Every structure is written in structure tokens, then in C-alpha cells.
Image (cartoon, rainbow, N blue to C red; front, side, top):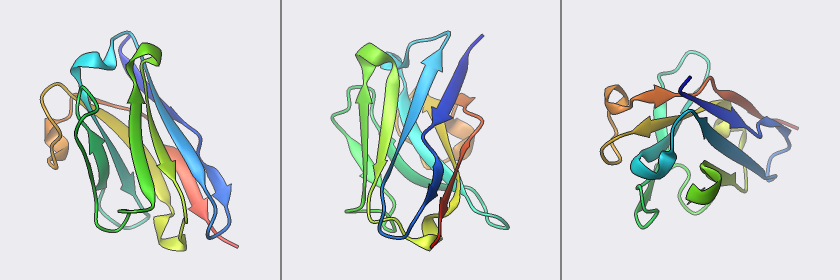
Length: 123
């Protein structure tokens, strides 16, 4: 069974940090660009960050630049999203997704999706 599984979400105070993980099973992530998306209640799903197959290219939404860092460890078949200086507006369900091509802002381009992990930033 091909699937992505996110983990690492939780409740954190403003200014805190979390590291999300996206692990693949049933296939190797080596040949996929991986994107992180998030969806807050009542809002559309939005792109947060993406990393190319080799890890040499990354991009970030303006709202998270300088605070979030995406990375990948192909040996562990896992992609990470390090989130620092978290703000209440970062509260959302975070999803990872695999694109067999390159990083895309179009959600429909992604082949596999995880089930999501909740991130709540609140005091």
C-alpha cells in the first residue's frame, strides 16, 4: 500500500517550534518532489513549502519564509518541516504530498497525500 504519513504536530505556544515528518511507505520518495500544505478551518488548502527530488531546490510561502525549513533524508525515506517562531495564524492541519514531477503550486499535480497532522499555536 502506497502512503504518506505525517507526524510531529501538536499544541505549542506562540514563538515555539515543531518539526513535522512525512514518511513514505510502499514507495521511495527519491523520485518525488515533496510539498507541505496546510488548511485552516474555513480556508482553502495552501502551499507552505516544497523540496525537489535531490533537495537542491526549495521554496516557501511568503508567510513562512525565514521561519520554516524543509529538508529531506532519502535514506530514511522522510521529509521534514522544521517550524520555528510559530504564530497563531500557523494553526492548521498540515499535509505532505508527493509529486512525481517537480514542485508545483497546483494541488492537482500531486500524486499522493498524507492524512494530515494538526498544528495548534496558542497560549
